Length: 543
Ligand code: VG1
Ligand code: CO
Image (cartoon, rainbow, N blue to C red):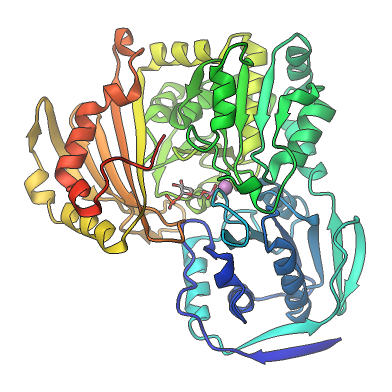
């Protein structure tokens, strides 16, 4: 094998965000750009003898080219084997599953998740460690530091590997094992959930509709819902992955998954609707004419986990990201288990799961998962819901309303201001950070500020500290407003405003969330001056 050592110069912008490095496709296509980052990963993690790497992506534009480059670099950097998804495909949770099942050294996942794809869209890359989870901050920081001083990368001269048929292929002394991207994952799902009960539910006329949004979950949904659970073919939509996701925005929320939403809110609606994102780690759950807030979803899964075979032995604990509503906290309290509050991003859950401190984790951003893998998992959440419905024999809406009646309702919403100028976004944050003294104890109508701070987190397992994780304005009575800048965008800045109010009174649970949160929305606009600074009258997306 001919290994070339190529001289290169660093790029200054390879800092991983909330979930890996995301840039426009055009940025990744610059000479040496991808190679620099991949070499920085290998230099940081070290490649021990006989190491195996998992490699796959969400199938978006540039996925195949990137995989060929990474295979040649893996061979040149001393990997013994790469497990690659057939066709270059592996959903994020499936990659996590494969890393764990085959006890590999780690994996590289190519995805920009819910960001649009195509030649003018986004591409992304992230490294997951041997536990199957996103590399923790100290590793992503080290990769970034390495990317700023890199001088060479190593790459083998070898022809492309055919990725379209399972089997073993040789490249520069390294074996590439092309695996079926679906079967290990589908097997894991079957081991956790009561497939027989779900099959009976579906056979009895319960109608479901799953929207893969032209992204990676299509083949997984085909195998799990159609082949293994006997759902009818019309249960799936947009199930063929496309490199540009059909021109859409593969983000399962009320705005971007509107095709599914219209069906579920229309006449003769199915009983259950769900969608997943570009790389398969997010989920949206809908009932007939009903939307399940993701924060509520986490709480409801926890409260009903005893009905699901994989979790019937009990939960060790729950973790949620800071902006996620406190609905899960009350369930944890009732179950007598701990609830942890972490910064945004799945990488903060890994240590807690590895240490056996938590079983379920969730984020308000349509992410839920458990310690079965170390990523959030879209189809897992859908199956969890179907298992609960099969056991309780109640519609989605009834399950949610009964939950609120028992635990109280956490009205919740997130308002995103996307693509605003960077200086306007940082101006808003700076203003807020400078107003803590003034806000502390301030009275707004019947809401009184109890505390404001810039959230920081000390990992209870390794003691690492993460600061600057979002401005929190906490009111007496449990209401709060959180302001945060997104760490996954590729253009301008996205300001996220998270709003939450707790309502124990069941006679008010029917209210619309925006209506119930109106006083908080007014306060948020007032104290941040965001309309003036951003020139935006309204958020781009409300979830
Ligand atoms: C967003 C979400 C966060 C999630 C992250 C990755 O991050 O808010 O909860 O973990 O995306 O999800 P940010 O920094 O833009 O708010 V995914 O499906 O893109 O891997
Ligand atoms: Co995702």
